[in-house]
Length: 320
Image (cartoon, rainbow, N blue to C red; front, side, top):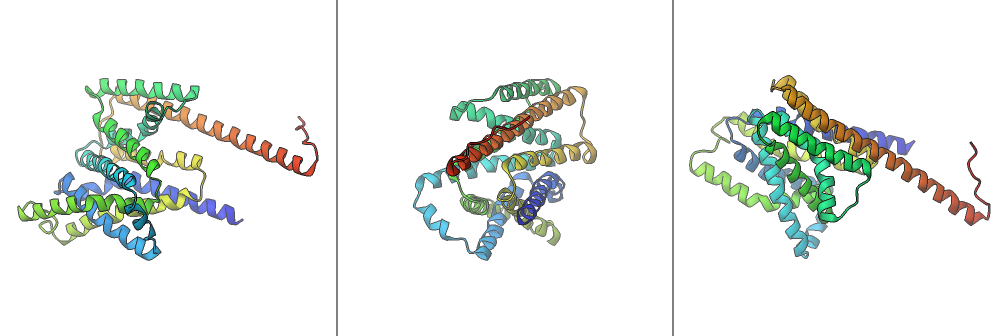
């Protein structure tokens, strides 16, 4: 019973995390007239404050001393911070410049880019269904390039930057709160320096836009941290296969907002490109679920065989 309650809670945490990430395009336009770079700088500064408070509450500081003794890990964190800066900044700019649909495409094709990077950089071997999915994704990008009259550079930059971020985070191997604290600590001084420079030149909107505008800019830290905390809570309670399916909630919500709320245009060629992307993701999901089912079945057989060997009772073949 306890296990079922934990999984149910994990599912709700996961839906909450990806749901908030999916609805965040509604938040960034509230920051106007602040530009994307100023919003990004506030996000970096306030995120460190929010995460720092969270770490104080849970009393998790031992990792800081260990991290400072590992120059290689510090270097990887700096790379992760640089890459996520590109991702965050471009996403904010895209949303505030009427490109929500193209931004959502970036997170749709992110799993395909991650797989391709695994093959090219890590020498991973793909199953046939994965090859078909990656090929279909490549065809989708070509169709969308024709539809947009240019390569979908926003989508590709978001997908590649986030895939690179995921790859670096995998090598860093730190918890969600800890890694965000380390990354925002790297970004804090440049971001704060930029905000102080804006204030000195009279270009800052933090106080010029009124008290409510300042509150919204400060809230970027909360908007960044809360979904991450929910994601961390989900990751330890539900299987990775479930988490993998939930990740599609965010771009689905973003896509629907782009069409239904922001009224962005979707000519037939863009629908065709998106349809190919969704086909590729369906293939990936089907293959992942089939592989997970086979792995569980094989594990059950090995467990049964080990139990039979330990008791001296021969394993019975299943009857049809």
